Every structure is written in C-alpha cells, then in structure tokens.
Image (cartoon, rainbow, N blue to C red; front, side, top):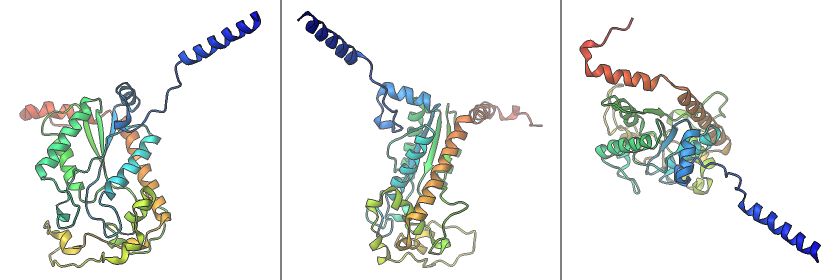
Length: 297
C-alpha cells in the first residue's frame, strides 16, 4: 500500500514538473503580422534590423491570372527568401503605380501623392519599429520609376534608416528555352504565368490564356527616346503582353528560384552594408552648408 502511494506521488511530481517546464521555443515567423510583441523584438534582432517590404498591385493580368498576381508572386519569393536569410516581411502592400490599367475592371489606382505619402509613412513606421534597413522588393513592372524616385527622395530630409529597392530578377544563365517571343513576353505572358504556376497554381486559368490577344498593336509612331504616358495602352490595350498559354512549371521553377536567390543575396548584402547609412548621414550634414563641402581627393 505504502509502495503504491509513493509511486503515485512520484508520478504526480513528475507530471507537475513536466507541466511547469518551459515549452521548446516555436520557430520564429518571418511574417510581421504573425509575430507577438515579444517575438517581434526577437525577430528584429535576429534580422539585424533588416526588413522586406514586398510591393505589388491590383490590375488585370490577361484573362487567366488574378488581379493581385504581382503581390501574390512577390510575397511568395520574399517569404521564401526570408526563410533562407532571416528578415521580417511586412504585410500585403499593393499601393503602387497603375494608372495605365484604369480602363480595366478590378484596377485600384491611388493618386501619386497618396502613393508616395503612404510609402513614406510605412517605411518611417517600419524604421520606428527597428527596421533600419528596409528593402522594398518590387513585383510590378509599373513600379520601378516610382520606387527609384522614392528612394532618391529619401535625401530630401534626414532619416535614420536606409531604403533599398530590389527589382525583378527572374532571368539568368541556364534558363529553359522560351516557347514565345521573349521580346513581347512582358505582362501575364509566358514568364509571369510560369511563375504564378509555382506561387499560386490554384489561381491560374491556363485554358483562358488564349481567349484574348497579348500582341503589340504599335499604335504610336514616335522616335526612340521620346516618351509619353499612353505608351503602354497604345501597345497593349487588353493589358496583356505575351502568350500566357505556353507557360510551364519548368520555366516557373527556374525563375522563382532565380528570383529568391537574388533576394537572399540582397538581404545578406544589406545586412553587411555599413557604408550607406554613414554616407547618408554625411550627406545630410554637408547639405546644410553646401559652400563648406570639401572637394573629395
């Protein structure tokens, strides 16, 4: 009887100790929105203050891809890259430049002022929360000029963080042969559709891809180097450029891997970068008194 009682007590002590023992730490998420407050602090330290801001858009992607295709794809590669080289990834962000698609259903086009103000306040808030190195990962072909201007505009007044812009990087040596004309493969065509077949295959309607034309209508006759905002509509009024019907998972796997590797390389380079903020601060100081700026040897 006494032996049985002692055994029961021993089992109770063991079970109580097990219940009180701290659980093994869960894997730290790279998703900003999934982290708790304490975990966010840990994540920023682990990321060495480096955060990703993947940016897409809401626009028509031919007759066969979802409106949010750019956002879905860029988040897919950004999240996968952050898993390889830890960084905190900001939530869904689609507030970019897309005036050229306002004639198509589902397009969400914010004013230029709001685009820049929202992006500035977003990066400011990211920096206030410890993201002193913000990599904007672009997933939309209509954003580069706006994003480069935004990065340049950071020199207008002092910031205690640095903005980097990572462009689309899907092509590289060893890429599988394309079935369509690569010169015309620009929007919802073979390459982009192939990437979508990897990122979100459930949203790709390949059987619809040939129901509209993605051919260049070349309705403007202007000399090379002369630009006008209507250029895209003049060429691709269906907001579709290329042949999505010939997309393949083989091409998609290559381009996704290439894109992820480029982002991983950028994260590592940004973490190691000690020059940009120092030079940025030096610039801010010298811009206060330009007449005193020394000539560099």
